[in-house]
Amino acid sequence: MIKSHLQPVTQEEKRPLVVDLDGTLLQSDSLLESMCAVVRRKFSDLFLMPLWLSKGLPYFKQRVYARNDSDTARLPYNLDILEALRIEQKRGRRLILATGARQEFAQKVADHLGLFAETYGSTDQENLTGSTKAQRMVERFGSKGFDYAGNSRVDKAVWRQASAAWLVSDSEAFSREVKSLIPVSKEFRFGPPRLKVYLKALRVHQWSKNMLIFLPTLLSHHYFEMQSWISCLLAFGSFSAIASSVYILNDLLDIEADRRHPDNRKRPFAAGTLSIITGWSLAPLLLLGGLGLGLYLSFNYFLVVLGYFAMTCLYSLKVKQLAIADIIVLALLYTWRVLAGGVATETIITEWFMTFALFFFLSLATLKRCSELILMEQNQEKKNKRRGYMVADLPLLLSFGVASSYLSVLVMALYLNDPRVAVQLRYPEALWTLCPILLYWLSRLWLMAYRGHMTTDPLVFALRDRTSYVIALSAGILWLLARGPLFLAFAF
Image (cartoon, rainbow, N blue to C red):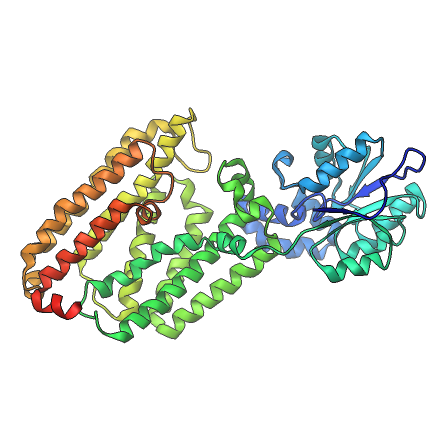
């Protein structure tokens, strides 16, 4: 929203308008984005950054920006400011881009927008921010010979030398501070991010996968042990916090790729609705909270969640780009949640169930990749640049996935034939009906994917699918029947 306090600049009284880039023209910070690109491109460079910084900020920026090959057309521009600048240009006003970003990067932005008559950025000799920027603008236009558009306290040095200000702010106190310093001709006010933006960054909807932690308790004899449910809830919170930490890290490192994706470009960090600083602050806090909660449960559980974090980081940084390896690791991550539930409640998980879980989740992981390839085929794309697959791989992946689905049902049938099951259940025969029910559900998922209707993660899809709820209810009733009428009466 724009608030105008002065009349627009007239033909008789024109002053050049100097515009800052980071946080003003952009909703993001190009240096922080470049640092994310460096880590994504070569993770070991993360450990070189302190060495670069020790040689001075200009040298640090030179090394970091040199590794940023971002498409300037996809940067999260502040559309309100961009529109206001276009209006000023049409009126004949001279627009100047002056930024702490590297000169080469700033020039790429200026060339893309086609609005700026001159461009000034940081070089090997100087870091063009604060008083250094103010001095350069005074040398070029004279004191009070220009207006300045900025957003931060470091810009106050420039505003002191400017004639009027364009202000970008989300703080009423900062707005008053600037207005006491200089006349404000235009103000762009943006409130703090809403709660739903944070929830989107945390990917709360993905926490549904962590419900697998409750599975060992549901399948054991601990239904009515309150301590088991409390342990499950704590384990769920621990896993969810760590998962959100990894999601945030993944989004920070994948900003450039997300902006090329029709859906992912709406993610908070890619869209600029959450700052990168916020992301780098939230991620370690969530990780420490999740690990701390895990250690509170037990040391063994702490090791499990630590292993989960390591595996997810490995997946995000490298494995997800490797064909076949990615679906195997995804299946292991699903299975890991079941294992975590068993460790948290000290419930023994049989080798049968772990084998079933591995094949079952391998099927769902393959289903996810097949869905992506089917949608690519419909959009006439040949290769997924973010994964290691081509559309031509689809028939083979389909065979892998369907085979895994049916193998999981076979393992279940063999498990139900195990004498140990008959000892635990009063009417084990009731569970045999689970096999055709599971066959139907898995086959239906594959059919939906083949028709191009599986646009999200299979487990998330199932949570939105009425048929899946009917099947889950039927399975629950069969399990209660297998436990016997007395158990059923007590349960209800």
